[in-house]
Length: 90
View 1 (cartoon, helix red, strand yellow):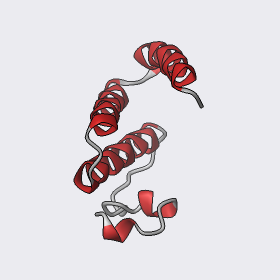
View 2 (cartoon, one colour):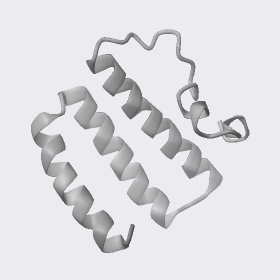
View 3 (cartoon, rainbow, N blue to C red):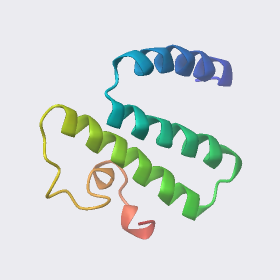
């Protein structure tokens, strides 16, 4: 995906998020999006860890919104499903 395509995607997606996301999900999305922007300019392992955990929090908020409790999901648990060496970061 080119930079211009990504910008266009987020512009459209952000409009939908503002209208449709419940407050907690919207807050988590804003936190993740801000961290993503920060990471694009300051990409260190520590900032990558923060970005991954913000993304995981967003996923947990989606799960909570559809009725899941997330009470037995440990920090990094969801992310470990698609990042094989997550234990080296978190």
